[in-house]
Image (cartoon, rainbow, N blue to C red; front, top):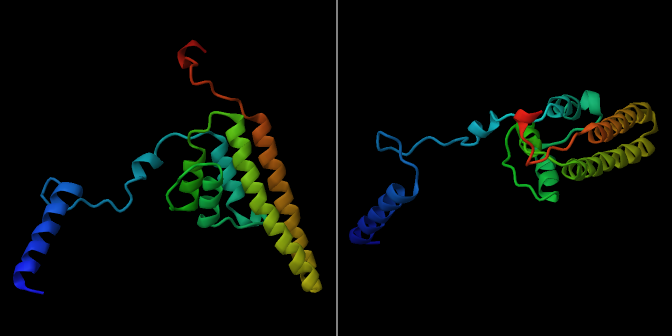
Length: 168
């Protein structure tokens, strides 16, 4: 590669940085490691705290939902959320929940993941009978969290977009 080609490549790269990348006030590329943090501070429904507290703790729910699991749940209901901390991902998933149908669809996908874990626990308890009591405890916890999800969906009050919050 000739020096002339290298110089033109460098000039093209510098031009790309100036035009297409965010530039800070000092002329350097701005630090955008997690640009979504300002979105993370937006308010979210009250049930999300309860949900994250119970759903994301394997000692309470009996299952572990990974970041990838949460991402798959979001994609299954037509949402796109970035991979971050699990709590932030769950908050992002339910931040703009206004209808019971959306909530039920999300909980349906979560229940599918939980049922998959229950199936694995059942297979493991059959393969390793001495561990059956441990897996049975996880299955009970998983069934309990699915009942909690159902209760949250039943108690959810839909929010009409046209409602005027001042007139309440």
